[in-house]
Image (cartoon, rainbow, N blue to C red; front, side, top):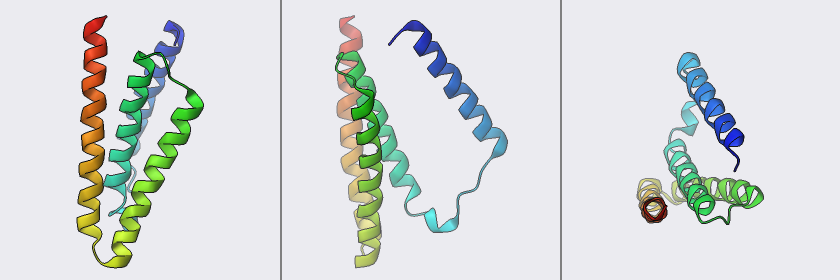
Length: 116
């Protein structure tokens, strides 16, 4: 990633956060059980992308596909849990597994940064 690309990304992130705070969108209530799991899956994909970038194996195509697949699979598992009547338990399991992955990737990122 070039310096200009990093700056552009940070500016886009700041604009997106500001727009989200100013607009204060309210998601539909039927999304309530799925939104937290989708956010955790998105964070998992983002931290995995940072790890891949630091290891110099980042691919934008792989990142987008894994981002969408992680979020989709997590939401599908919660929907399956809801259909089976165990939505809360399955949501917790998905969040625990994704949390473990986030902390594993975060520790790899930390090790990579300390090597620099």
